Image (cartoon, rainbow, N blue to C red; front, side, top):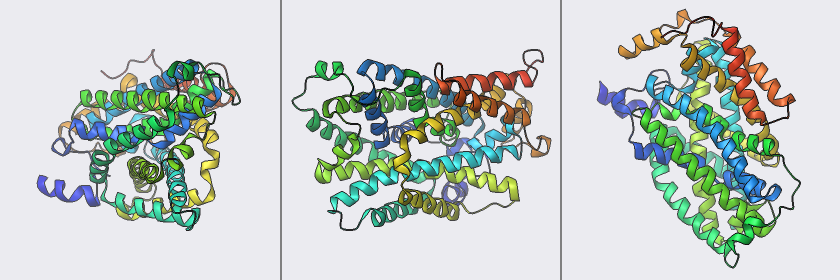
Length: 436
């Protein structure tokens, strides 16, 4: 039975509606490669260049640090929970504050946000492909070809994530390293670090929110990947190494390039001044990030449809539909809204994470049922769940409104802390003891 599950489920089922069994977990190397692949796409260079064009080098690094700590906290908490339970993020949301039907709202929010990211990354690829072909096909044709081609790859599920990451991550780092050396040749490091930015200034709080918003959806969806980790230690190294490489290394390089070239449009320059090597970087970037975007969005929407209608859709069929939708967003010009998109995500998703983290690690509302079902390698009985976890919904709304309305400090952190506090108080904590 186990062999059948190993051979067939990752293709057609991918454990969408069940726990990932212990003997189907992946190695630490594979998981680190998958996560680094998510964190080192060209979209990260766009974010770093935006910081470099609007802030000094040291202020941009401080914004990177603050945003990264938010991502580390959220990713570790939800990733370890996912590894422990073998649950996807959508399944975890059911048992961590949002209830049976309420979790579908979280799933839909994750799915549509990740499809938006798919559209952003596909636009970068389509621009590079069109440029390499002398603008003959046109942006729309290139966007359709790249988006639908990558969608076809992701019908293979998590197995595709693993081998794509192992192949593309080292190649991407080598190619980008070569491009960066070419662009920065002749510049002095100290001079670039002390160059004053020329773009419209951005506050530290807004910049940190943009850094957090850049990968907050991936952080909230960490359980989708973390459930394939063998233990919490593997989750820690997967998250920490990916943040070091993806945030600090990549952002630092992008900030320096923005200072050297006096522009925030670093990705276009990187890809269009390096010929076919630049195009290779774009292709590798899109492969290793959009596979994760499409994978997690498919898992999330599968869960939402199951909750709402009771039907279990095909993973392959839904992946094709969502990939097509993301491709159409590319054609519609979502790349032009990049900064606003990041800032919105930066205050919408931390409250979702706050409710789930508070419920799982502090209140432990359903820990007894989860532990018992884990011993039996089954799912807990959903009949004991409330239809909607209204306390979770209220806490989320409070966090989102706080992030949008209060500009002091770091909006994304404000929204996270408010959601945790409101949810804990609504559930009687610390006056009512949590389950031990």
